[in-house]
Length: 251
Ligand code: PGA
Picture 1 (cartoon, rainbow, N blue to C red):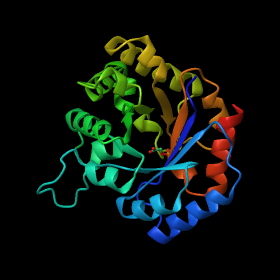
Picture 2: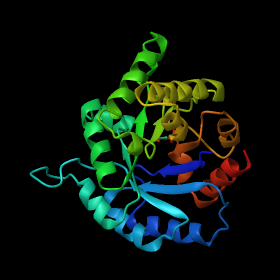
Picture 3: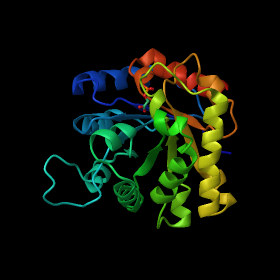
Picture 4: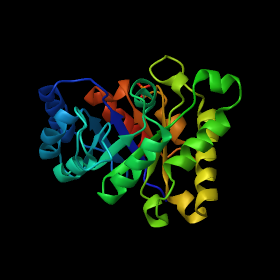
């Protein structure tokens, strides 16, 4: 059985002090058992969050560089994240692909580096509205997954978390139906199965992302191929984040 996994993606929200206050309040709550929880935050917040958390809430970065060091002004290495004790790293979020030239090749390098450094990669994939409408979305997702998992060792592949996030449903007010989201998560699983085998594809956790909130989390989580959610807006308030974990627990 795959353990459900809810990860907040804070993007460029909250100051360091606000982030720490959020986490401290979150840790006073009675969090449901059997659901993994993580907060992914800006780099500069991570040290304080790692210090403040306990084993109930994992801490993740929103990006990381695959090189150990070098002349990459403004970047942060996955080596440094690992050194700090960060548990997860989001790789290839659509905002990074669209605004910061992230490619399938750089995503793959980051995945390999994260696995090497024991930081769990949360690999994002997703299609644009145009790709959805002109029906190239199946090829798009298949390619993104094949390239992200390239050269990954079979045992390591099981540790990867995939987040299927249709770009047309992120922060836009539109969300994919749970049936649609499930079909796409199934496609991700089948692509992993073809690349490796059934044992591995059944072990990989696949999240859905795009306007997930307390009101719809149960619906998504009831689908067989959706194992969790990567949540932006609805992860920014403690009550809402706890409600997401409870929804995942009760689905
Ligand atoms: P959203 O963002 O939940 O605000 O739609 C999801 C994401 O970008 O990961």
